[in-house]
Amino acid sequence: MSLTPMKAKHQRLVLALIALVALIGAGLLAAWALRSQASFFYLPAEYAANPPEAGRPVRLGGMVEKGSIRTLADGVTITFVIHDDKARVPVTFKGIVPDLFVEGSGAVAEGRRQPDGTFRADNVLAKHDENYVPREMKDMTSEQARQAIEETK
Amino acid sequence: MHGFANPARFLRLARWLTPLLLVSGLAITGITLVWALLSAPAERLQGDSAKILFVHVPAAWLGMGGWSALAIASLTELVWRHPLAAIGARAVAIPGAFFAALCLATGSLWGRPAWGAWWVWDGRLTSMLVLLFLYLAYIALAEAADRDGGNGRAGQSRIPAIFGLVGAINIPIIHYSVLWWNSLHQPPSIAMGKSAMAPVFLYGLLAASLGFSLIFGGVVLARMRTILANAQTEARLRRKALQEDFGEREDA
Image 1 (tube, each protein chain N blue to C red):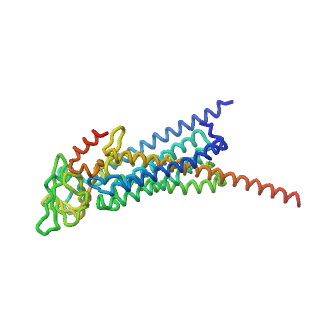
Image 2: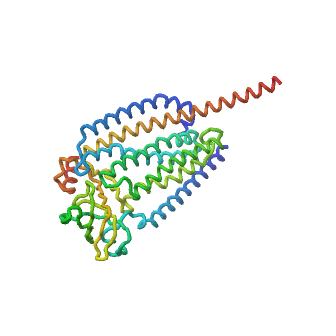
Image 3: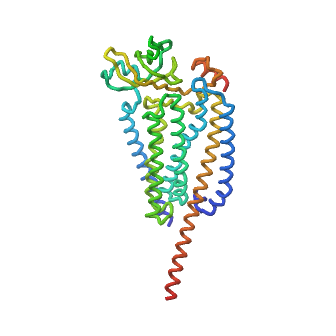
């Protein structure tokens, strides 16, 4: 007597599991197909290996090289270098940068590649990393701060 | 699991659990947020704007956790036909949508000073916006299904449950969006067993998350009680209408 409802329940469970596996598979395939298009920016290595055509609007993201931020004579134009461990790209930008835009930290420049290979940004976004450090530790580098956090845990 | 299939037993439990969750949640959240505003330290680079994390991160977790619960309840409804599962899934949808919207709003407020933009079409932000739209679609679908097919009773139609399961595919996408794709949003600060947050931020965040989760639980229970009460009213009215109908015919 109790055999029939058990069977139906198991049938539904199997059906639901098959549907779930198919769904997850479809989602993963879609995400995989999107993996390059869904990226928010080019990394310097990708930018150097496969440069976008000059004049096409793109985003370039990486770390701001230490000691590379310079303000030009006009007072509003800055130049800096965005790099990763494989390539470095010089960037010029005219305007106001966000507070979190500092050397040694992440940034995304929106703009166009110039024919000479440099990058002219129309807009600069700062990228925050995953570290949250109180202001008292602000003189430390991210690495030291992370160690300090490790020690106090 | 079918111990709670009896709504009367569930209601007896929910009657005292609902105010307990709501009051303790409001107290913990209130204390944590006052502490965060008055005495939590400013962050090294972000300054005081980092404090928004005590609302933003719990809201993001609850927005995602809400849909996970909704999907599990949908599966339970489809496979085991558990009578409270459909009601639970419907009860989660509104607080879930609220926290997803809160996450987007606080993130936008933080993004302007930190990144220099209110909004960017980055993988994390876009998938979170999709989650909010999924919640709104679920609410509309469940409402329509219960009215047309279910005579005002939750769980007569299984279409919302199927939608709840299908929508669950977005949850891992939100989580991995910052790892799969280059994104402006930072990767998670907290992973299994390790944290890139100073303890003062981490413990504050955990306390706020506990408080918001208790509120979430309390609201879900209150919504479930409301849905059950509505179904009961509906059934009583129908019975009464039938009796009157019957009475008139006898008079005639």
